[in-house]
Image (cartoon, rainbow, N blue to C red; front, side, top):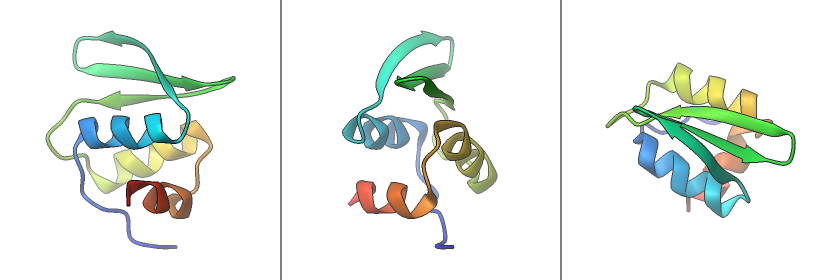
Length: 72
């Protein structure tokens, strides 16, 4: 399993949008992204902890490899 990068919540949102997700709603500093019946909640922090990023990728049904490939 590749090492996940330390990136901001805004960068995660941009990457997920490239992967076909759309922003469903926002409440405070948390954004809900959806694609079909899958979704995830992204905190708008300057830097997400690796465990938080891993958890939201699991929610979204995306492997870390797919996510890292979509960042570039």
